[in-house]
Amino acid sequence: MNCFRWLALGLLATVPLRGAAPVLAASLAGRFEVASIDASLAHRVAAAAEEGWQLLAAPLGLPPTFPSPVFVRVVPSGTPGAPPTHDVAVETGGLVTLWLGPRAQEGRALRVALVDALLHRLGVALHGAMVQPVVAPWLVLGAAGWWETRIDGARLDALRETSRRRSPPGLVQLLDGPRAASLPDADAAGATWLFTFLLAESGRGGEWPRLLARLLAGGDPQAMLAQTYVGRFGGPDERELWWQTGWHHHLRQRVLPSLEAEEARELLATLVRFVFADEAGADRLVPLAEVLTRKTEPLVAAELARRGADLGRSVAAMHPFYRNAALTLAEAFALGAHREIHRRREALVAQWERDWAEGRALEAATAEALDRWEARRRGPAP
Image 1 (spheres, rainbow, N blue to C red):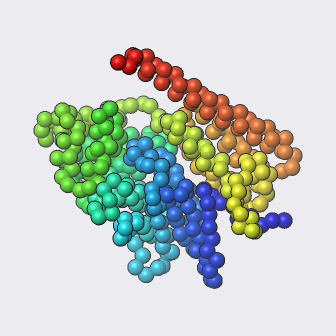
Image 2: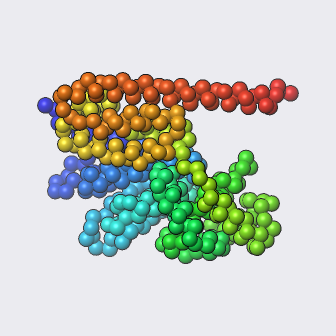
Image 3: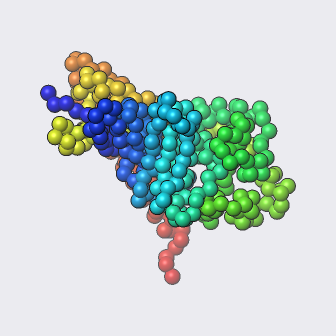
């Protein structure tokens, strides 16, 4: 029987060193590269990084890939001089390295660390290697909060409930806060709402992308806000009223977070993409049907369980075009490994392919209809 090394997301490379063998796990090329002596931890961090990239690509205006990825180095517990949470370093040539300490290797601390590094890498991409990116704590926590509440509607409900019992933090307090991503809880909630509010207030003029680029270059954030969101307020008092009105507006909204059709498609495509390397070192994509038949193997079972958990957290936010495909895929991941369920496995794979094709067709038809409507609205070219 061949011995397979199953990969979590994208390509996985093992470095054959004596003793503890470091593992390099990558999301898609040009995004994140994770190094750890714990293979399962490397996979988990790489999967989280890819999830964050997909959900933050639109609000942060990320390119498809960077020329060089964010290099994530997982620091083993007990290492002398290890950061308690994380450190981000922008090195010569603009290379960005995230040193992931023992207390930032899972959960919210991991998301904050990945977002911090991603914003540094975006700053390098926007302004060049000679400009040290300036990444404010509210921006890190706001983007991390956006990620959490987009993927899990329960977190959004919880954030609303806790925020209703507080007054909104002052805008100046958020923008000019301490230079570390360790704000009080009220300010962390405010950072998420400010991130959401500024995204919502950005119109066709592209206010938010321009503000983000300016913030990452450094300078007075209050002046940048006034220069970018022109006409929204006249002075400090009006600016604070503008922000507080936005805070209360978003707290009262009853809409659950929903992935855009493109986001949902990319998320499902990543979850159903399996790559393995055989003993000869050749990588190949493995069809879902073949993966499910090998669920009796511990590594395969563990990987399907992990992907099933990731999918379960995002089903509620899935775009309607892809809701059926997500539910079918979740059932396939949870399917047992007994021989008597062979027919059920085949049926689920076939159903997934139909649901996936229907979702793609709905997305394409909708885009085509919107394009035709936009062309009619503009009228014939002069």
